Image (cartoon, rainbow over all chains, first blue to last red; front, side, top):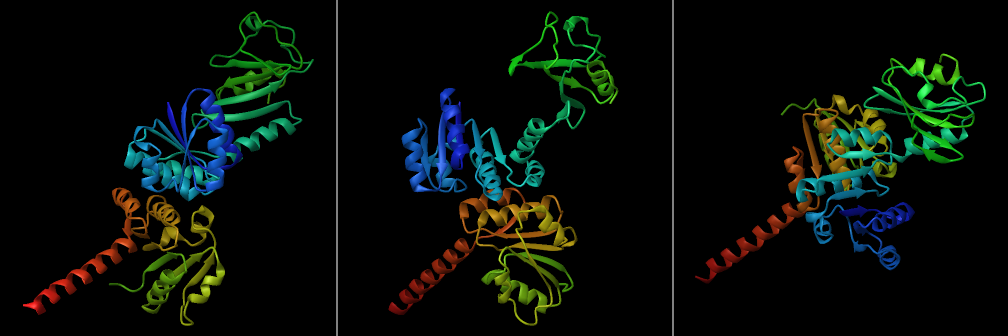
Length: 220
Length: 146
């Protein structure tokens, strides 16, 4: 897989390092000469110095044969134009733009460019870590038709000490993963739930309350 | 051409301010957006429109400028990508009927023509004029020789 990444800074560095470690062919486009030299020395990625929203630079970076383009500069307008040029001019099948301003994520999607925003992701992670609440809504999936919820089991939980196969769950709900001592376990019927376990649940809005009740004993 | 249109202009530099002054003088309601409010000094004293300081790639700024009511949207900043993004948002989200963007890079211009954004490329325009001036001079010179 060949991936073009446009941007700079530590995010780009570690992302590129991850991708090259996975065996992807990574090409970085960065405007700053010194940063380019440093990146080329430290990473086993190709580095092209220039403006990623310039078609000549994209071509030089091999946009024609790229499988994906990832635009993560601090400027939303550049990320948008990079992705549009890559897909419209070079036919890159997958392009993803970082929306620094979270409101622009929706704007990009309306322009036909896949977008993500770190503000919301980091925000919800911080909320999870800082939260004293036992229950955290992680993320809505499929426009809110599916909920992903994390619960920490306490000693009063009606399911503490039970085998998963003995727990009666409503239709269309699932224990997706449990974390015990920070170790993720994809649970099967023979696993026992213990106080302190963090459990990630998949529910639907219509059965959400019942599922939560099954785990906490309270209807929320 | 009617002169009571609502026109939003992004960028109040040399080009933006000339357009704003002229369009305002002709009786249109003009709103000028620029990040740097010092650029509003480029507006003439008889400019009767509104000045809005802000980043035109951000939705709240465009909403404040009431872009949804605009008949015409012109993006004139010195950054091609700002112009292209603002113009697309005006066209696709705020449904402004007439959207124009200044784009210096002719290669970028081609792509956005496909997307229904009307672009004006000063580089191509100037190149064309120079080319014509040079060619005309050459022909008239040849003419003189005869």
